[in-house]
Image 1: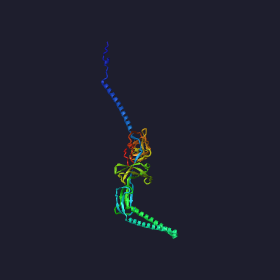
Image 2: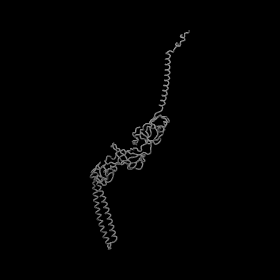
Image 3: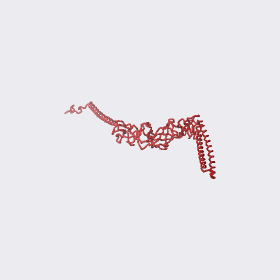
Image 4: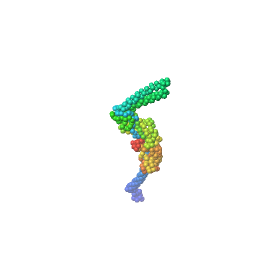
Length: 414
């Protein structure tokens, strides 16, 4: 009988794999898996880095839109206050000043006496003229009687016709002498009336050049003969030279506000009353008169004022910040971004320079997307990323106030 349980024939006696080999297999599988995962992670990181590098190569720019210019703008021009009427007062008769009634700063009404002149020579001339008139009138009366008698005698042929004609001619001469004497009396009477100097209108005395006892000569023979200067200070005139480009806006009734350094917190309202209707070929400006009411007398003739006008702007021009343009050798350029986010260098024509902003006459449209602070390295056709930002000119557009001072900024910081 065969024994099946011998060691060589027993299946249970087959050699089993050792645990250490299993451990090695598991570790190897883990290492392989980790290596694969690490390679995949590195590949993903490399792809992300390449994508970021490519993304960072595209610059990001700030995008704004042009704005329409306001319908009006503030024009500020210098001006000098002048009296509405200013009259130098001279004597019309010669003599010595007897008395003056008003000094500088005195407010006078029309017809108020300013001074009296003592004219003894004129007084004596007037007395002599009146005596001459009396003599002439007596001679005329005698000539009338003689002529009448000769006409009566002629009817009886007691005198000749020649004698009658001589009497009539003598009467006409005596009558003419009377008229001349009367005229001389009236002339000297007028000179006598000029002893009193009156104010020609309501105003204020701005100069007094004479004192009691001063010798006064008739006429305006120089500044030494000037007695007084009277000025009408309500209203006041202000003459300004308006640049030719703004001349069409200057019309009668246009409001004007005056600001003076003496009254920094106040504004005085006036209006344009007339213009010269002619451009000065030397200054290329339009002489414009502004009248300002001055009932309280606060404004003084000769003072300096800044005259503010609200003038209309022709057309619908655009306005952009000054830092939205590139200054290239070929001229001014604006960087416009198209619908595919590619940059385009657009030539522009500018008009007025407001310091922080520029008026664009041509080259841009209201819907254009332009780059604010464009980098100098930006090239035409380059791809860019866009970011919409607020237009720095929007507050100025809402307020509607811009200054046109020559060479002065408006205060709108970009």
